[in-house]
Length: 181
Ligand SMILES: [Fe+2]
Image 1 (cartoon, rainbow, N blue to C red):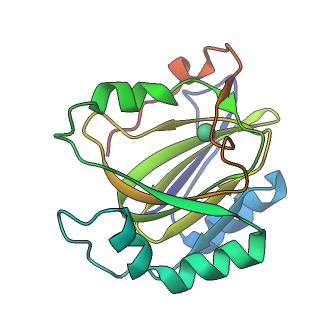
Image 2 (tube, helix red, strand yellow):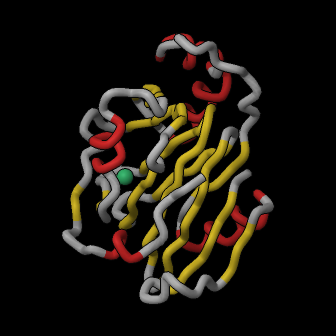
């Protein structure tokens, strides 16, 4: 189930609000410039399905999204708990960073958790199957896939290096609860 927890950025121990209805999550995130939508992600992906198969299964949604928002490339990140590089994969974006373009994802399997640092708030957004999230360019954030990650996310890009993380050097992520689905 999708879930949003809102915090003051210096009070990770005292959440300001918790939302689980997609419409409430959408409304809470919108003023910060974050797009949150639900899409129909009803395709059960076969164990061995690769990038091409996943994209083919969601072609209509992917095409519409690319056209509507000017994305040029798309790929699929899929990870399972027994992947050999799980710890390194988790660590990669677990510290606060930003990108030079929107970070747009559709979760089509499993779940993962974005922490968005907007002004004096932190929005912890647990994304599950069918969630589309677009974190605006320049917004500080981090992502936790959990210690035993399982997800498949369709990722949209405008430029080939759009995914590169520019790390802030802040330790804020260490003070917030880790993602433990
Ligand atoms: Fe990111």
